[in-house]
Length: 372
Image (cartoon, rainbow, N blue to C red):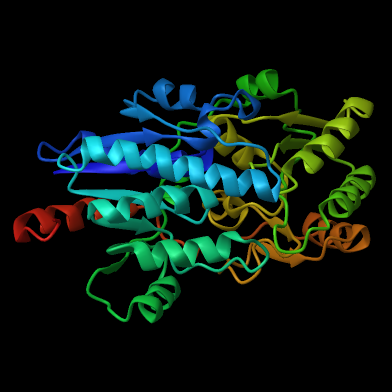
């Protein structure tokens, strides 16, 4: 069985990684990896190089993204659909099905391009809800385009089944991201401090803040977050946002703040998967609106201040405190967490065995010959 994977950003590749490595160990399974989007852009660190550093072979490199305006995003979707369409013509008889992940616009465009070629589609992380981002619509659309669904918990399986009106091809396997986090070979404290210029003993805040793409008040929002940083005693380790509407506005504001306050905040395009998981492990807490704070942070038992509406509606554990993007609200939640005794949180996204479950399902498909 040859399984295609589409990756368009550092985030989805990190989630795929445990499954790709498991497939490498199966005699009757192989993968083809199609790389596009942010991976191919110097602006986002040319993260395709991180894929090769993991020893994962890249099958094809496709279309990068355009600018982050509404028109730019719409045009990028068209370019991605076109470039992937040309690829499927080449690989349509070589792939048993294709894995797609999540909810981004470029992933939707790539998924839609598969339909005329009748290659079965398997969707990871369907059924989730993020009401503060246009991604919510793309995720649901990808669910409707897909033939198999590998969800991260029972609630999300239920949501998928409401869309598809069938339970036969929906499998609750948990999150591959949790597995990747739990099994990461973390960087040592000394190496981490030297590489990322933070003092673990003094504590630091790990932040990723993406634009809200429903309510476009992003300049005001990032300014409020910066005001909160000014009153927080800890240094901030900040990973820059994805390619979304208004993403450049956030970059401009936070990089200007870093330029004026290099002792308070340090920004990175990406930390690499091990660097990012190590940052999660060593940080005092997380502040932001990234899905990794909702899903993977629980693997490290970290408290998270999830700000604003981007992740609104997404299932979360008790380690996540949802907070408005207001300086006083963020500081109040920060003080509550700082004065709270460490506790153990249950992660609603599984126990870190998703790849094993998926491999078992794939092997069953081979036996029953239901994959194509």
